[in-house]
Structures are given as C-alpha cells and as structure tokens.
Image 1 (cartoon, rainbow, N blue to C red):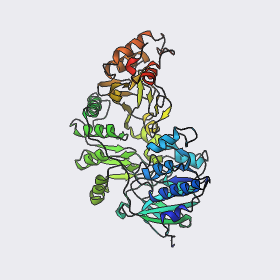
Image 2 (cartoon, rainbow, N blue to C red; image 1 turned 180 degrees about the vertical axis):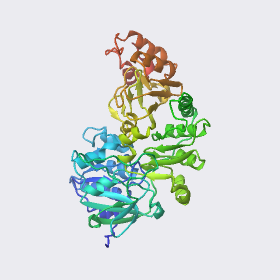
Image 3 (tube, one colour; image 1 turned 135 degrees about the vertical axis):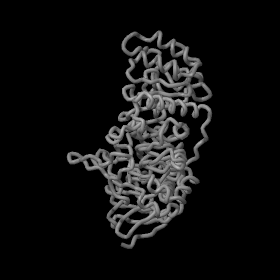
Image 4 (cartoon, rainbow, N blue to C red; image 1 turned 45 degrees about the vertical axis):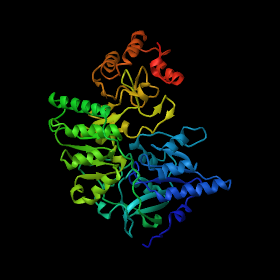
Length: 494
C-alpha cells in the first residue's frame, strides 16, 4: 500500500478540537516529537483566533518536552493520563481550569481503554523505525500502550524516525492480553520468554499519514551517585545479601525491578558491584544507563522492560553494538512489563522511590504537601503490591534538611503499610515484615529518620493516642504545617 507522506504540519491538520489522542512510547523513549509540537502550534493558532482547541491525551508514561511540554504551554490538553513529569504539564494540572489529570496504575490503562471505561482514542500517533506496505510497524525505543491505541484508533499517524535503526526489528515483544471472560494465562515465566510478535501489525488503511523525522529521544541525563544515593544503594545491596545468606532469597537470586531516576541508578550500581549478589536478570519498566553498564560487565544477564530510557550516548552505543545486545533485551507493552500476575509469578524484588513515608510504613509517591501532584503513581503500585520483596528508598531529608521525608502521617497515601516490606534511607534499613504499627514506628525512627528529626518523631509517638496504631489526629500533620508556615519542618511542635 502506498502511504501518504506528509510534513508534521500537514499531519497536524488532521487533528481536530476534541480529538482524543494516544501517543506511543514510555518516558521520552519512543515518543513522537514532530507531530505533537505541530499540534501545539495549531492549537496556538486557533486560540489566537479566539477558537477552542484542546485534545484528550493518553500516553504510556511520561513523554519528552516536544510532547507534554509543547502541548501544555499551548494550553492544548483537556485531560491527561496516566503519568507525566514535565514541569509545564505539572503546572497546568495543578492549576484550576488547567488540564484535568487522573493518576492510574500503568498496567491498567490499556485494558481500561479496551473495556470502554475511558473515552476511546480516535487517533494514534506512533513512532517507528520501519514500516511495511502491509501494516507491520517496528517500534523504536519504547512501547507503552502502542498496541491498544493502534487497535482502537480510527486514524494512525506514523513518525518514521531514522534516528532509530531498522536493526531494532526483533527486540520487541508485542502482545495484548485477552479481555475477560476469555483471558488466559500470559505465557511468560522468565524475563527472557516471549509471548507475542516482534512487530505491531495494523490495518494499513488506518495509516493516514507518515511523517519522516530524525530526532533523538529527549531523555535527560542522570547524575553520578553522590554520598547519599551511594549509601542508600549500599544498604539495599547489604539487605539483599543478608536475605540470600538467610535463605529467604534463592542463592541464584531473583529478577529485579527498579524505578526511574538517580536513586535507582545508584542502587543498580551498588547491586552490580556487590560480589555476594550473583549476576541477575531484570523484569522492569525502564532500562536505564546503569543496567546497560552492568550488562556489558556481565552482571545483568538479561533485561525486559517497556523502554530504553537511556541517555543518547548510551542509546547510540546499544545501536552500534546490536549483535551484543539483541539477545539480551526485550521491550514490551506496559500491560506486560507491569503485569501484576507476572510480577508475582516470577517473584520480583522491587525497588521504588518514595516522595514521603510515615512512621507506620505508608508511602506517598505523588503529592507534595498532600495537594500538588508531582509526577504520578507510575508503575510502583503494579510492582509493590505483588512483589516477592517490596523495597522503598528515599533520602531522609530534602530542601537542605528543612523537610523530613519521614513524618507522623503521610499527606497522601499511594502505597499502604500492607504492601511495603522494607524502607531504606541513607541512615539504614527498616525491615517491616511481621511487625505491628508501634514496632514499625520504632524501627523507622531508629533506623531511617535523620538524627535531627528523631526527637521530634519520638515526641509525637509518645503523645499519640494509645491503640493499635498510635495516632493524634490533632497534630499528625504538624510537621507539614510548620513547613508551610515557616519553611522548615524542624519548627514543628507537638
């Protein structure tokens, strides 16, 4: 079939006010770039003429600035889900009258779209490195919700990005679960198993435009581990080593899931450098720089994820050495990479980052001071609740010590105490398995809280109402209140 090759601006003319668009990719990896930016310019033109122009927006996770940033600055998004990390989009969704945002577990978005729980995407914009006349699409560095949006959409726009080589063919495992009541088991039992096809197959008649591009992924850089993140990584490594020695983790180890960011990179670095931890596999969302480095050293033997969320030099290194990496990597839809049943089946060790924790082990991953959305839940819930061992990490303080990451009660709960097995900061490890609320509080205060905040939290615990979970509803948010009123939680009183 002969496709219609257009410029990004011409393709954007196919998008109308009120359209609901699904975008490929997961993080900035594999996200379209040229067409979203052109849609933003189209929105600005309409607004300048006094006309309404907004779209609904589904993505795999966060995107690059050419997608979330451009569209947010153009005030072009009516609603957004399931996850974002762009400062301009964050401003919009935290502003009354801005973008309506609903946070979701990433593993659930594709199926809830198919179930009809959410507005159907009528347009899919998908980045590809290769496209055949019969509708075979080879995706690039991220998958996300691409299979589902391609199936549901009336129109598909392809960004054919020559920055990504056609040798990526074969690295993807494209699979959609059947919907109830006929859903069967997903045939994945180890991270290297495959369930689907190496290509995304669509009806070629749905492809209304192909836009040729040559654009890098917009993945930001990662900072080198500092003293705090290195200490957190060492404690994670130490804890897992002790679990192996105690026989609670098999000597051959278990697959690892690690979240995104600088702490996650530092943790992976320390795991890889620990001689008491054998070479291991990963079954995770994002494959970051540290994973690729450990793969080259033989410390990570295989990695399954939803995206290659790596810096551009590392991505180029992968592309230049595909003979080495091709049989060591799989990229899947998030419906598989984050699938709760697969997490439990394979016995994943999950390591995610907390924005805030309380002394009973509840975790806030999303909301600053309880009200302002930071990024979103992401896939942490998919993994945490179903993990073999669920670990949360966080530096004990922020803002130069003015904020304690551990408080009497979290200002927003994303993961309850029932799902969190281990909490680790740069000060130590709190193993919360088999402990009561008061025991958890004592472990967390003694092992994880910054020493400057320990007296304050002990004072709270001593005066809290007696009962199964000691709580004082009149003062449990005093540390938050002190920060909002004085700029420093250390000024709190109980």
